[in-house]
Length: 154
Image 1 (cartoon, rainbow, N blue to C red):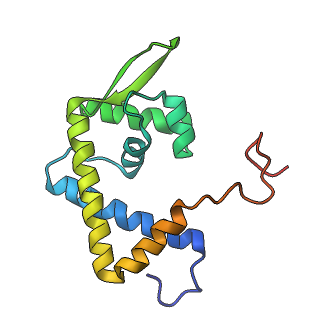
Image 2 (image 1 turned 30 degrees about the horizontal axis):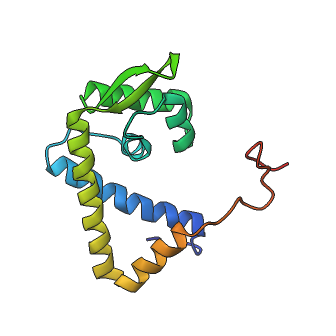
Image 3 (image 1 turned 90 degrees about the vertical axis):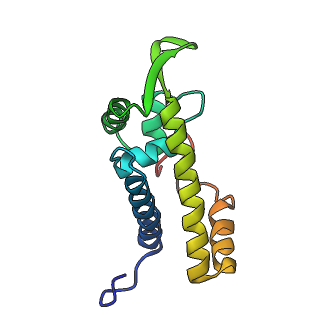
């Protein structure tokens, strides 16, 4: 991607790969006439439990602030892709879940992503895609030096 720069670090390469899938997904959704969604909203959709998830939990899973998750949720509610309901486990919390239209779009997105993975296999080979998937789904454990109770270096 950057022919005249220093070699890309592994995290940078993973970020480039994620953006490749995001851009392909967003283009396909736009072509299908889906309301414009942001990469953050796409990520939110991916980490949402079928039965619903709190905004705080969504923010944790996405690695963003609660405010960022809240903004993404409200944009998707305005697009009729998400709804908020009372949390049966807590009177103080609300769960976010997909609407029927949100479920339809989610299934479309899953199909688009599968198609993108097939296109990637055509370009770099099925063995390379299988190796990537294998490495990314293998248990890595905690990063060295990370305190399990605090989530950062001790």
